[in-house]
Length: 185
Ligand SMILES: [Ca+2]
Image (cartoon, rainbow, N blue to C red; front, top):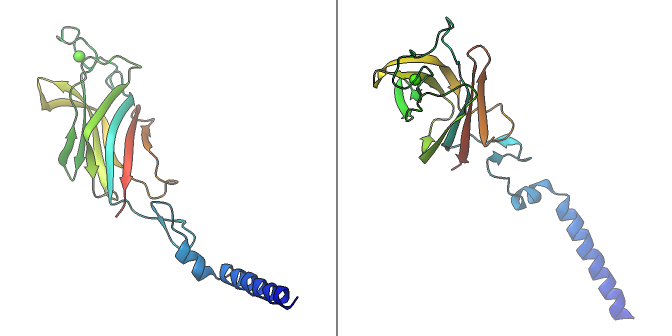
């Protein structure tokens, strides 16, 4: 009987200790690890990625005609009158990515560019420049700019870390997807 009573007291002490511990926030924080990319007491603060890898670019919409309504290329062009598209990304006016040429891309056709090894973005918070060009005369310099402009490849205001970041400009008639992987220190 005495032994049972002693056990009951021990159990009560253990339960009390457990409850006391679990109500202490600092102990919980030591035990909890935040999901990758998050920090803070409630794991609701986004970290800035140390590296973003661009694994694929998909151009889904582009201006099919020049602003004056004419075709990008002449009917006499060896590739045909549709644009011969290259996609270029610049960082501080330096090209960091130049795609192969996709010849004579017709309307409603996606251009899918797998990038291997991936393009590595190590400064996620600065603006990059996108250029969608009609490749003319066999060199990038002579190519006509179909659309483009500055954009953020990473937006800290976004929810989470989207694996596909879409950039759309209704004004410029473009829609382009960047497939991304994030790394954190
Ligand atoms: Ca063409």
